[in-house]
Length: 481
Image (cartoon, rainbow, N blue to C red; front, side, top):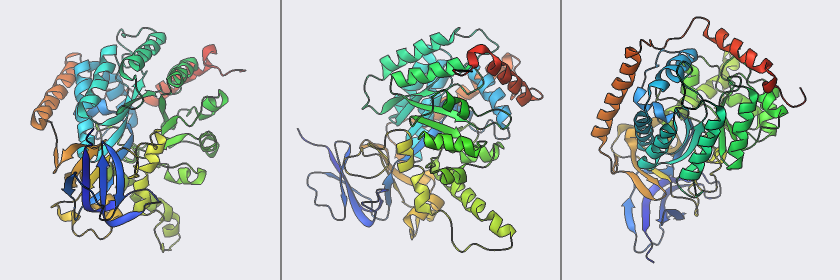
């Protein structure tokens, strides 16, 4: 059979593979969606040639935590706290979403990611109000052509309305239906995950059941951990129950103690940092320093486009700036000046490539431009002023690049974006649908007399009281307690 071959020729190649290094001028050969060779002046016959001279060729970026369904709520919570987000989005907007709104959010959100060079997302999908909502979320990702881990969320967003799932067992059954219906193969672009209900918001037995269901299907587990200072993180409880493991991505982790970090590290758990969200919503210091102390590799996420941007260039730039500042603050306050930066741009790129691929269990397939891996590739450059000259390629990607500078995006060798334009997408029509969806969703809330964000006084005190009651319940106790 004839092979489909594409060669990206003449670019600056950042492989993110220490054995291959970076090439100031090199080629990348793709055969049937797989990277076949990387090197200077490859001898290639019968292949489509794409001239990328003067451009940077790099692995596609990987987002380890994104609530993609919220895409058409862009910047709604620009001035909200985390409590406002919980009451306004999770308990307010989410119940007003129909399945068609979830499909649109995931479809548009996945295209937003692809447009900015993000070829893989861990979709933390917690608007599964009905089975149709979950199906729509998956279909939205698939329609966009992105690589994704679909994290099935068990969270109940209809506390004041009759829910579709009247018992947690029904949600577990729906997860198993989703696994059987949509994920028959481990080799597809979409793979299966589970997004846990936050610790303390349900009896512990439900959390245990969610983790067991995930592991029955070899599904990646993602959970919000240590992002509320007035609530327990659950790390010690997870460890005591034997539930921590390397198949988990713990998101945020701003509030964790050294003991809790030791537990995560000892069990091989992974970390996702949402720099822009955490800094803007007052969640605490992004956990780069703690991760370094405990040998946990940082990864990055865009989190909520209902607040911030959907591109990882911004997250990487903000994360690197924060960590360099944090590393020199004590020195500055002592009246001294640093003599070197503590994290390089090249090191920061690992957060969204090789580190992230390992965190979501796909490092054997993506994360670097290693022959044999899937051809998830971005090419940046072009006419943008910030792209000339490219004196330091890693520095250009981190500090100078925006989604507008992303010229080509390939997922498994297929062009999702070419010559600066998304392929196969009527983007104006899709954006018009997003405008209409947002207006309709917010209109439903207005008609119901539901103000936004609608955060009650002493919001965290109310939630802490609820959490304490659940933890005191017999079914919440750990074995032996």
